[in-house]
Image (tube, rainbow, N blue to C red; front, side, top):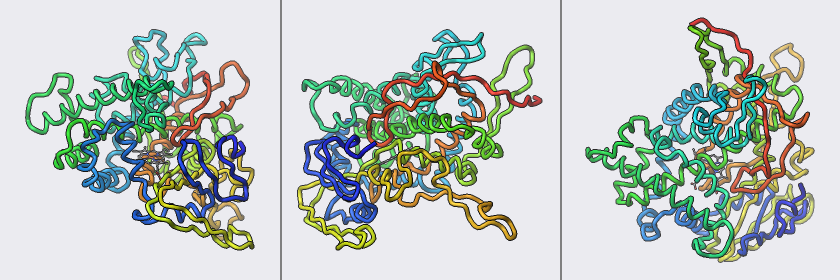
Amino acid sequence: MAYTEQYPDCNPHTDDPTFDDTRLDWDARGFHSPSLQKQVLSLKQSVADHDELQWRIRKNCFGFPKKEIPQFEAIIDRVIQVFTRHFLQEPQLGNIVRVLSRRMETELPNLVSFNSSLVDQTAWERVSQAEVVDNGRAVEVDLLPLVRDLMAHLNINTYTGTAFLENYPDFTDNLWTLDRYFILMGSGLPRWFPFPGLIPGHLARRRLNDACLSFVTALDALTEGKDTDPQWLDLSDVSQALIDEQSCMRSAGISPQGRAAQILGTTWAMNANSDSLVFWILLRILREPGLVDRLRAETAPFASATQPAQLFGIPEPPRLKLDINALWTRCPLLRSCYMETLRLDSSPWSVKTVHRDFELIESADEAGGAKPETFRISKGQYVEVAFDLHNTDPQYFDQPRKWIPERHIKVSEPADGQPAGTGPGTTEWGTLRVYGGGKSMCKGRFFAEKECLAFVAGMLVLWDFEPVGAQEWKLPKQTKMTAVVAPKGNIRARIRRRNLVVSEK
Ligand code: HEM
């Protein structure tokens, strides 16, 4: 896709490291070459920061009370530290990933239930128009909602505990509605303003806030040793991450409404990108001849499934075993597929408000022998880094529009006496950036990688996928979202159980 298709109002050139972004009717200067990106992301907070945007999102998209913003500003660094500790640092990251892994082992075998009745189907089947076909041997589904909703259940249950989605089963639907209108909601326009999307966006946010508030009220009652509403009787599996985040904000006097908005913000961040990303990774893998077999071979020691012997005529679901850390560190082809999908199927951006005039100077390398250019940015402007413009730049990525599964694998030196190219493979990000950068860089990136790799490996070991109504998998057109793109239209898939080795009881 040409730059101009992605940014219809911008006028970037392949040899121009900057562009003007007029999409949101703001005075924004964008940069996409690596050296300029790096300089923008390392600007001092006093020169430019993402604070204004951050608070705008918290207030307009997540419903954080405006009057409490100064109070939250005073403790935001502490709250981010709590989040960082649980999602980026060991041993806490390991703890939350272990819970996620057990949930995946239980739920991935239930991807489809082979039940025709809506009442007996899982929540993710109900939203994906599941239809049992081929005399009960296969199920046809809409692939995006199926995998997206299953991922959302795994993620949300891991973070909030299971009572939350049991009490608010339509939470995910409302989350997708908020996500669809996220940038519009971020504008802060009121509900009555005649613009398509504002009413559903506001209604979804209201329902999401109500669900989170009821949950926070129950958590507060539990903390204070008071009786909780019977619907919240079992809160024993709420994550330590959520408990610590709430306790940090509660001790600083943030209201239940403010803390409910924080839960909404975290559940949105956890699900907005990873859940649709696994759809794109699966689709990209299924389209490449022979790749599914290569990935099954690579991941076999770390993602395995057996079929328990059938006793008394009652079929049991397959047993799945996942070693998430090994899938992350020892399966370079799988990880390279993840990176390559993010390269082509996401369009993340970082935006900062400029508080003081400053200059950026192009690196000598990027100037390519000419005099490095200087760019002057003025107070009051916005600076923006559009990572996808770099991620599809032919100067850095050979055949930039082609999805190449091995693109990010670097093969190390082979052992003594072994032929070239046979050394162990590792993956390298190089200049590819998909999680933003600087202070606001994604705090869930390790968790995201582990969950997406485990999800895809688990899917491939348990299930076979075929396209419906076509010989080949088609790649749908894309719509830009906040980072990972959304497909335009639907991909229908037929799913079958794989023949697994039968295990003794
Ligand atoms: C592959 C999936 C994901 C992608 C591509 C992604 C991408 C991003 C991007 C581009 C940003 C903005 C960075 C910036 O402004 O410079 C961000 C922020 C953030 N992400 Fe992610 N993300 C993913 C998954 C997750 C997950 C699973 C979590 C939670 C467990 C998460 C938590 C966050 C948080 C809390 C922030 C805000 C950080 C801050 O402002 O300090 N993300 N993410």
